[in-house]
Image (cartoon, rainbow, N blue to C red; front, side, top):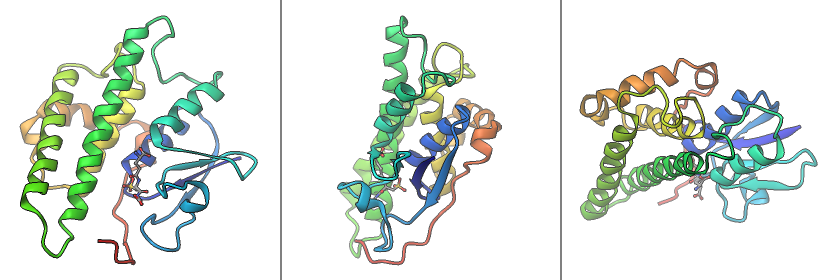
Length: 213
Ligand SMILES: N[C@@H](CCC(=O)N[C@@H](CS(=O)(=O)O)C(=O)NCC(=O)O)C(=O)O
């Protein structure tokens, strides 16, 4: 069986958990704190990041969430596709563009999270990351406006990625004003959180024991 190394707050890992659930692909969830020395992640990913998908042989591993999702789509063709039909090239590329934007917002949020923990956090660095978060959310809000799903009016990869970053904001930045600033994003996120695959993967904070910054 597949094993997914995940962490409770991880928006990147949530994308994979949601996708495996939507495709009804069974897997074992291995929850870790990638920042602690106890993590097994480096044994499977030299970049020491999760999520990591450990394949059935227990040895080979796939890492980097975008690639894990591409791998799952390619290797499990009989499951529900998370992408528009192959002939709709532009829609498929747009879905991946939404994932790039959503992941980029997550990247800036992670950098912001750790900068705030430094002894002397840089105001300029925090401002730069927050600009990326706010700019990314504004772009996402435009794509989502008035729609239930971002691409081709059906649930797919773009919604998994967009829903994961919005769910991450709920947990990691409860005081970020994105819901007031973009009510359409809030409505969109609320609807996604009603899906079973979202309900069973709600993120939560983790306790990091090691000193990392
Ligand atoms: N681009 C990567 C980012 C993954 C990532 O940053 N994972 C974090 C955990 S979390 O932020 O998702 O909770 C990690 O393992 N960090 C450990 C490290 O960077 O050494 C992906 O999409 O998989």
